Image (tube, rainbow, N blue to C red; front, side, top):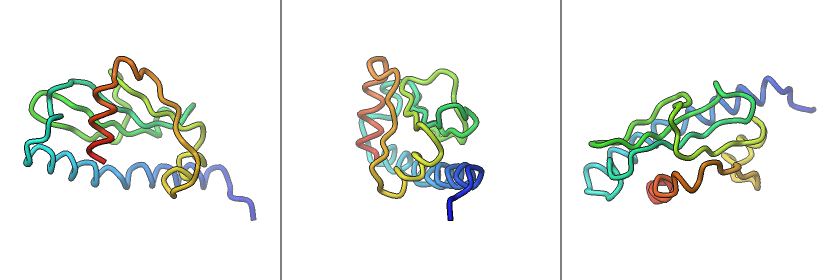
Length: 118
């Protein structure tokens, strides 16, 4: 049975938003344990699905901490863009789908920090 596109979008939204509490815990752990990232490189990393900008999440680095937002932040430094809800689901399930990286040069420190956190 072929999965319906709206089911894939709903599943992608659940996958994306399920990871937010984990990122919040990582941000708290990093701040409590003297990590190098919180506030040193102000900017944001956005994960989104192409064409569905409301299907997004943001990890924002700012002076004094890290925020995790269940939405797209307009002043992002790095955007990890999945080509479809199915590609996001595949990536979250350990598949071969990878996001397209946008704005990497301006946000390289943010991406490095995010990879170290996760």
